[in-house]
Amino acid sequence: MGKIHQSFSIWSNVRGEGVTLEHVLAAAAEIGYAAVDSLGGPPVEELVPLAAKHGLKVATFGGHATLTDGLNRPENHERIAGELRASIAKAADLGIPGVITFSGNRNGLDDYTGLLNCAEGLKQVAEYAEEKGVNLNMELLNSKVDHKDYQCDRTLWGVVLCELVKSPRVKLLYDIYHMQIDEGDVIRTIERHHAHFGHYHTAGVPGRHDLDDDQELNYPAIMRAIVATGYDLYVAHEFLPKGDAIEALRQAYLRCDV
Image: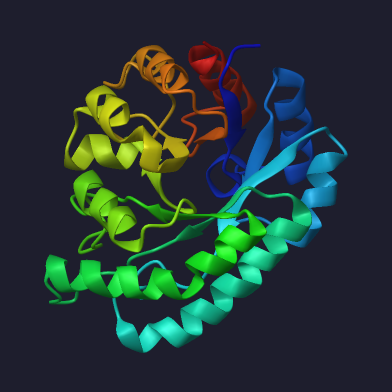
């Protein structure tokens, strides 16, 4: 077992005829996985004991609704702050290191105003996250292919957001798949900005499939770059398997086991 603590996303990997969550959790544990991302599965409070049966942790879960209608709108702040406080408390109680936050789509909003709005929204809950020891990971998503108009679609935008909030608990979910599509330069980005990264996601580019030789990212090199930063949380696979889900998870684990 290498130095990367690997996780996987439920929504993308528990799929196909006859594939059950219980089966995938058991297989993932046998492969060597450390955790599962609670995205698309049962409520997190139900997933934690189910995962624990197989020696797995829960790495993260969505902290608020919704991906498209998020923190870049001041009218959402009261609602999202309440949802995030509840999620932070739940994460702390369940031993989950971070929850995911979303900027929302632009819908005509310029990036500077959206940035300031997101910062103000996160400031409302940052102190509580610090008290509870839970990271708020703003997810970076591509707006070129998968999430048209999503505002937090560049690493530097997210880094400036973290710097505006000035909380050690406000970080980024650096999704390698998404950022390869929108900006590339993955390893240099990790080297420069890793202090702001609280969680990682993977998938093959193009297509969001297996981490195999048919896609363009050199995942062993990327994992070595992550290890070199001293990162000690989770890297989660969020790809859509082209074939057998368990075999795809096994191959992804081996490729990233550096």
